[in-house]
Figure 1 (cartoon, rainbow, N blue to C red):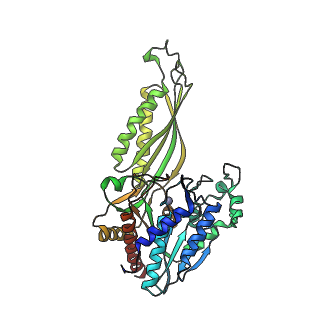
Figure 2: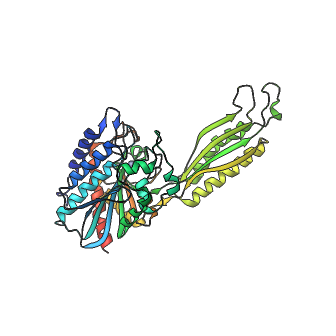
Figure 3: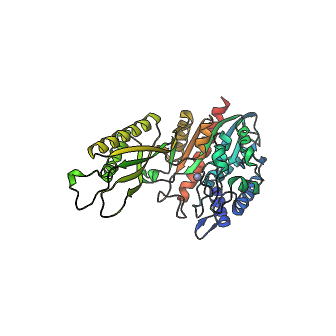
Length: 414
Ligand SMILES: [Zn+2]
């Protein structure tokens, strides 16, 4: 097997792609733009060397299928689109590793593997233009909110349906893409970590347990404006005092949750002048955890704390939910295969959750057994032109991902 797989070829394909679609500010493959169309044409040309059937589905996702003895499918996915001024690996590393795995499988099984293997390039994962991530995969999983998506506009006022029409996609039919998941038996996605966990552990690769659930709320404390000179400290209804106490409390909540994270990302005060006690203070709270009940507990604790601080400060508090998504745990058996493939490749593995969402979360949501593999990100940074991974680690991830694909083929056969 090892002689058929050429991880170095993946690195050189990625460099070729970077030269074709990047500039001095980074990668410029924003979905549905001319550079993205050029990227797809380049990908297609790479795949033409293989006996695969290629087509674009109703949502603009690009599928390449190597038919096997069984109709049951192993799916491998990624995304060629990027944010503006993006990194050179986010999304396309998975695609180019997927192309190499297809080359290996094709060579090993003389064009006819035991199960069907399909590579998918999801359309508009990043949502850079319309502010809606996971477009193609959520259309495919059936979870795209059509009413919300229909009204999305870019900064020039172009609607998503009109932008799609320009690339030959009928917005009203995008969910027909769901039929692509027929016979899907497993979904694998490799990705650059986009955070510093593997870097800090000095490990090249990790098995991903799932994507975090998110609770996002606005919390408003209501007090009373009063003169900063004439109001004694014990007579104040200071909305900021209560909000300020939340800042330290969320660290304790996160610590107790064992694995969750909490962020107060914004704080606005009214009247917001130097000579007045704060009448109204609005903060936003973003909480994330891989475990649904732990996430619910974190939210409960934050609510209780806000009420306690409001009472202590003689102010009132109200909550408003901004956004929410449930955790998407990945498949236990596939996580074990992923771990095993990593250990066979580089000795040591680590299991970690994913903070960012990925297309894999949508596929898992559609009920397909799913797992992701992460490769270390130098600087722990993504969505930036400085995004990078050591070449040696890129080669290791292709090898480990290929082992995972082979183990999964065996698993699907059973
Ligand atoms: Zn990505």
